Image 1 (cartoon, rainbow, N blue to C red):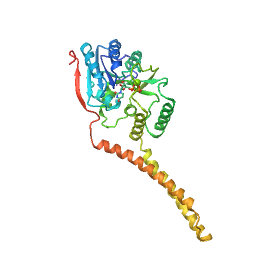
Image 2: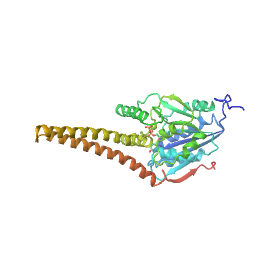
Image 3: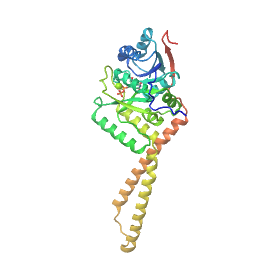
Image 4: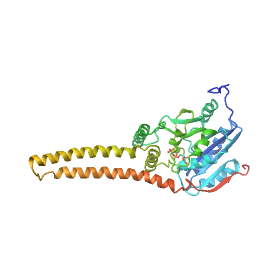
Length: 326
Ligand code: UDP
Ligand code: MG
């Protein structure tokens, strides 16, 4: 029997390409971004679908998109409010035409260079199922944030079975099979970087230098990033839950030893009033540990709560198509 060759010797043909662009307050960027994206992608495919997800923008992004739709063919999914980039990507992915050979996820702020698309497509043509961009530097983030993010990736590497590449983001080209796999995942609180790793498939990293944001500002504040990190850890690791049993066991054994010591001491030396300091230290220490572990339990319970409510991860209030799109 003939085994399929791997990697395939014949480059794959890209007949249909889909681009998903999540946007939140990007009015200033979009006027230039959409035409440039279209002209770049049309070099490589005969059929191009563009899905812009307006993630509840508060500026005139929607108006700009409607204006652009007069001249260019693309689809806009309008969210009823801001649900976050992860939800926007999820919505985009679930609207990809199953016939589309590959799907590109790209930001609208020019930080994902359009010039990389060619290389992404070449890798896909050579048989790679997921091509992703890796930032070669992260000068756009403050030092403290960069240090925290390095720590986060190290931690997630250690405590989860999945491998999330450092400094890789949502700038990706996904094969049709990867899109289908991601669409099967039903969890509501989505940490996309973890999900890309979880679904597997053959991957290839391409380094790129992120451009400065041309207009507007990054919408990822410190608080949002910390929230994303907590979602990332709690969706992919049970270690924070388990470690409390170990810590609890160690502390209980130590306290038992200590209790024996006190009993012996009382028997030998009689009742002794001092010990105030020891008790205070023990109570506060244990109190702190208990509060922390309850907090961690709470994190997971909150996640279970979110999942059992079965709310959709986003609400689409409108779908706008250009006149010549169907
Ligand atoms: N974005 C979004 N919803 C949000 C925040 C951001 O759809 O709640 C979009 C944003 O318009 C941009 C992309 O996600 O196209 C990346 O966002 P941003 O540039 O703020 O993030 P950074 O580049 O700093 O990671
Ligand atoms: Mg950006």
